[in-house]
Length: 520
Image 1 (cartoon, rainbow, N blue to C red):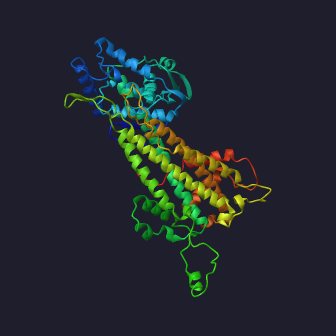
Image 2: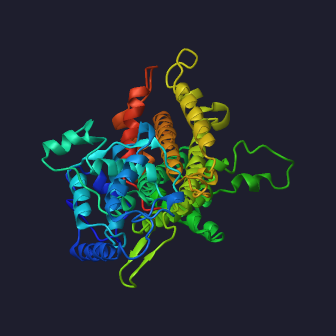
Image 3: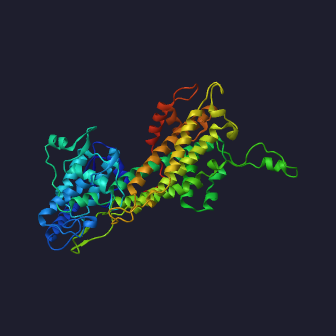
């Protein structure tokens, strides 16, 4: 991507994430959007003396009943930014902040916020020069938008606070001085337009959706390889079987798995020889199971709801990043200022909480398969912990299971929905809040945990492939996964420290191309 052109309405998750990961990419706003921005700002300035307009010539929140003098309107916006730059805690990832800046630019480009082209150009300058304000993680309740986090971004635009620039955290003042640009002076409404909205939670949610796409794809790949290792029966993926239960996500996952395994020489068609031999006799032991455990047989049924949750979340996030979420909205066409609550973050908060729970279930599915293949009493064909040396003297992959177990438990604790933790604030003006930013940050953590567990599963499966020597009979796609693991981590023949190798595997799998399972 060289240039991302914004019009306020067509930004996608894929384009946003791709832009933020490409250091040389530039952003611009198209001419049609610029004309609307000019009209909106002109209308606002023409009517600023005619009647009370919230946050423009009045105070904020519970102080909205205070009408301000005309000479105080510029100072009001500056006071808003400084007073709300109160975030605390660790800094949020720079790519999340950059994404929030792009989304904010996109929503302002609809020409319904009353800002000037000057502000648009300042925001573009910061984005294109990767001057990224530092934003602490704690502070947003997500209902007059992400006020605190977005205020820290606005603080950078006016030349205050700290920013990331060229890999270092430095004072904003030093950067703009070096680049020979003056601090930006906010015009009426511009401070409010910058911080009043859901751009920050939406930015994090966009990246989480991208990560969830890759996690779902990896889970399907791992599940497919698992079926190969146990010489699974083909009927568990039968098109007829799944069509008999026409749940969309289930059928989509099953279809993808059939495609993945179509080139495999390891799956079995069901055979009834043993049953025919048993007819007319007393109960006999067949000596083998005729059905796999649920974590192998019910992959499509478990991942199906996750696929649907991800698809729905991506749709909501895509709509949100192309929405106007500040207040009031400047309706030039009908010559009115519309006061409302588009800044409320419950759409994003609710969706991202549901995705968080889905990712926890995905992680749990992986953890159960890890246990299956490491526990010789369950799988009945692998050595304990897939130890390829001397069980008892050497420990194989035993240590990795502890990591998978503890990380899954951590995610289970985080699974409780954040958006129902509404606590009234702002002198009870914000009496029902979304907690959307915290919901998104927690989901990001659950996503990171999932990559740890699924990477461990991929290593466990690859070790099992080495023991069973099935590489040449695997499907093309599962063999690609096996080779990706082995490129970053050699098989464990003797005990060694695995931490660095696991980091390499996990990072490689994070960048593994996603399958087309949950479309935006």
